[in-house]
Length: 130
Image (cartoon, rainbow, N blue to C red; front, side, top):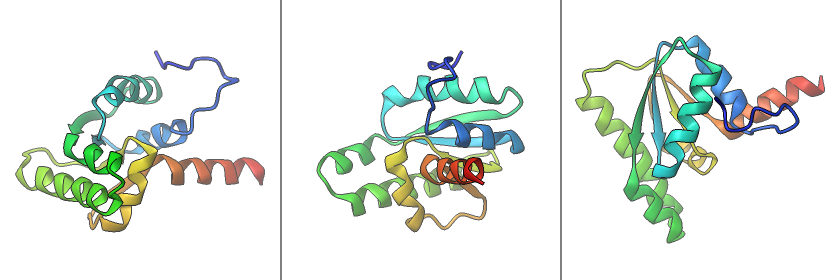
């Protein structure tokens, strides 16, 4: 069950989770291990048809804490690229689990969809205001 079942609480990452419905296999990148279970819970409560594979990128968070956003973003992009090159799995989408990871999109040159919570949430809110 999602950690926030009360509809009065809006999770910024819920629209992104709902977007996963259109994909069958999704690589979920995280930089904090504590993010894995809450993210898994949210994704599975939003979409029980897709397969989610988690990729933990611990070195990236060290760069974030040090204030080195360039190294943080590069670490994310490079680790995902390396993982995809060596994985036997083929993914339909990549999900950047933490809002802080959205800045890495500028460094990501992937041939599949990359989902991030800030953009997904803004798109959702824009539709709500129409």
